Image (spheres, rainbow, N blue to C red):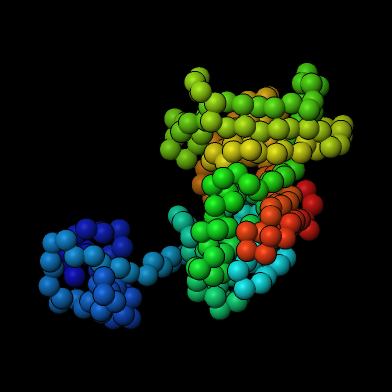
Length: 268
């Protein structure tokens, strides 16, 4: 107890007492740890994280497809794919585990919390690496849609290649001189008066790639809380989601050899 309180003062002694009493703190072998358990340097300690005031996400996911190997979900805006930061239960992974009872489920890829659309999960550990290899080897055709300002000065279709690196803040990215590591093909689907609908096809998967590339072209995606201006955490407006949608994914299934295509039912 003394070690936990000293090492993690933000949690507080009362919360650690409650977690220990509930059996939520264990050693590497799964054995329960108690307030008077001895401290041993090098010991691995595991605990189940809790968030006292987790903000609810008032939107729901849809399951588009499920078999013994895969589950494909249609994620709403604002819902994180996996637990992080302020979110634990209000994440796509935890919601789907509770809904299906499948504890072996893991996402094969990620999309931003602010982005809606198609996300693929592996259900079977035995075939997981075969599906993960599709993304590692860039054998997945990914199509996104975005609403952004008109690009009157740009000639479409176009390709944006650049080097994307971590920005001045650890949670933002920026384009930097050097060998390109990010590639996006962009075309226009529809021209409106105040905004155009763009189709984005990323050949690489760098963090925030589409948002950074659109910003670099001078047409930042509408309602972006990071680019070009960073807004405070928790400042999202549920009535103004980021206008970015993971429209579809397609690939040759490595198990069945069937060409699969999954498309979001959502509209920007």
